[in-house]
Length: 118
Image (cartoon, rainbow, N blue to C red):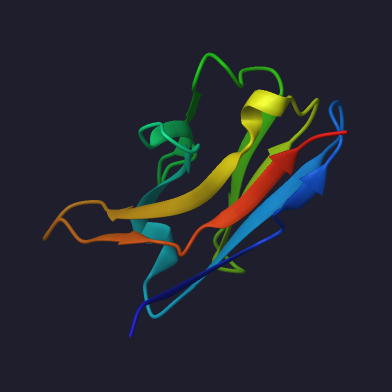
């Protein structure tokens, strides 16, 4: 059974930092491309950052230079380091895993709330 458990969300002041984690079980972690998405109230879910199974990354323009996505295949964990947080980063953050090759399995985490406010 596949399980994704997100953690690390919370309240942070503008300019502060948070690190989100997405721990996976029940899959061969290294075979998946991964991404972090976010959804603010009244808005569509959007891609924040992505990392391929080979380690290539890409970022939304709004977070370039502030956020960093990484993965630890030995720990089956995906990370999002959020620095220089802004109020507009406030949203529920979700991790997404997509199997590379074969059947297009896609898995989503349950979401973790990030609130940037003073």
